[in-house]
Image (cartoon, rainbow, N blue to C red):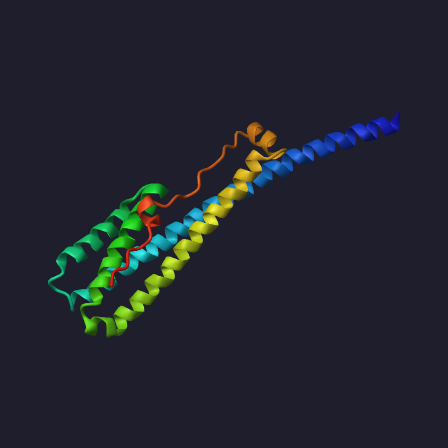
Length: 184
C-alpha cells in the first residue's frame, strides 16, 4: 500500500515538474527572441547614427549631388521613426539602398574615396551590416527553436495549455533577394 502512494506521489511530481520545465522553456525562448530583436534594433540605430557623419564627409566633395543626400536623410528619418520591427526592417533596407547609392557616388570622387574619414565610416558601416545580418539570423534561429517547441510533442500540449502560439520569422523583401545586376 505504501508503494502505491509513493508511485502516485512520484507520478504527480513528474507531471508537476513537466509543467514547470515547459513553462520555463517557453519563457526562456521568448526572452531570447526579445533579446535578439533588441539587438537588431541596436544595430539599425548604430547604422542610422553613423549616417550624419558619413553625409557630412561626402558633402564636402559632392555638393551638387543633393538628391542622393536627401534620399539617405529621408531613409534615416524613416528608420528612426519606425514603430514596429517590420517597419524598421523595411526602413533599414531603404537606408541600405540609399547608402549603396552614396557609395557608388564616391566612385566619381577619387579624393573622397581616399579620405580617411570616409574610409573609416565605410568600414564601420560594413561591420554594422554584418552585425545586422548576424542579428537577423540569430532572431530567426530563436524563432525556429521556439516554433519547434510549440509545434512538437509534448511541447504542443503545453503550448496550448499556456496559450503560446507560433511566431513569424523576419522576411526580407523580394527586391533584396534579387541578384545584383553587373554591367561591363
